[in-house]
Length: 345
Image (tube, rainbow, N blue to C red):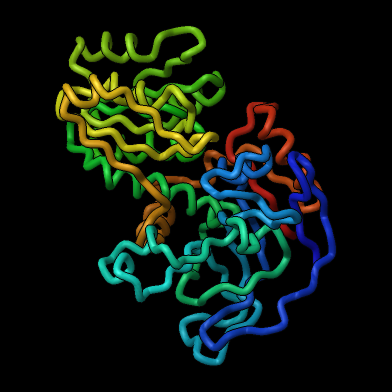
């Protein structure tokens, strides 16, 4: 079968690999149909470990995926061949303290599809636990199913932010997860959502998603602009989603006293810089968001009812054989790329 592999910094190729030979009793064989490219995948592509010590080559990336069930293990009863499913990529151990406390997203023993040491979904077939597969309704495509994963990351972050009706919100960084947070913050009751990004086409998408004001930091000071827009008060909740060196501190600067900062982005140098004085004097609550937990049924319900349309952010699709071009466009922010998805026909 074919797999798209990272073989070096900004070097990708399609190779033939061995098909999965064994299927455990509680596993399913998935024919992968759609795989979204995440910001983390871009970190790996650029040679940035994104929290890991090293990136092994060759490396098959991809953790945002949906597909068709080809075969099921002997103990699987809820799924059958032919089912269309979205997949949660985080396989927690279910026995450690974090898992037992209901926090599988921070399981220290978990295996995450498409992270160093765990083959990803940018290939034709993949074995995955059946408990992490969720049937797609007829009105959701495979592409929409794949994009449920970043939508889930956004929803988990919004849950941490505890937005109240009438709150003001800042979203610093409008990649796909940031854009989902803009939408979800509006759904949660935010009266104003201020969005920042250095790319104008992302700011245009943010305004379509419900942002009150889009701010490009290369032209305007985002801190001053947001403080002026809130008459000096600041926002109730600030989401840092850019993963840039300056945005965590900006999130603290635009927050009101006793406000909340939710850090979602992953900085390339594995640091999260906050200046102590504004953070301490305001008595800010800082929360760090990682992945998601127990959330796929909610995502599917929101998407099936069109409360949120995960596919609306998808601007480009490429076949697996053109995966190198998909990464090149995203890496260079060309062609007003939003969410880019690789598809297997």
